[in-house]
Amino acid sequence: MAELKITSGNFESEVMESDIPVLIDFWASWCAPCKMMLPVVAQLAEEYEGKVKVGKVNVEEEPELAGRFQVMSIPMFAVVKDGKVVNQMIGARPKSELEAMLE
Image (tube, rainbow, N blue to C red; front, side):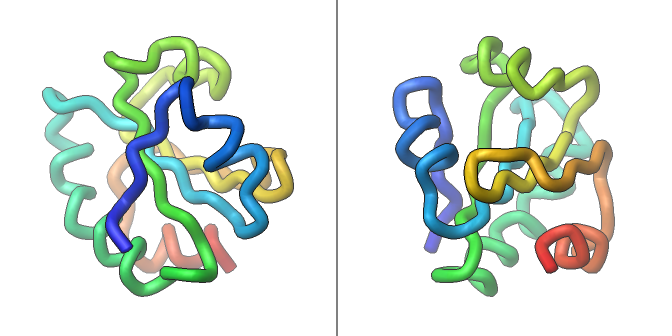
C-alpha cells in the first residue's frame, strides 16, 4: 500500500478515527533530508501494510496540521494511536529507528 496523502480534509477519518496506528511523515518538497527519507517511508508503508497506516503531510500545503503537531523542524515523524500521539521523532533517521517507534 502506498503512503496516504494526509490533508485537513481526510485527517479525522484517516488518522484520528483509524483502528490501526498511523505513522505520519511531515515533509516538504524542498527539504533534502525529507527526500532522503522517501524510500524508507515507502518501504515501511509496504512492510507494515494492514498493521500501520503510513501517511504524509506536506507542511507547505497543510500548515494547520503542521501547527496542530507543533512541527518546528522537518522531516518529523509522529505515531498516532487511538487519536493520540504516542511517539514522535525529528530528522532523517535509519529505518530501524522508525521501526522501533512503531513497535
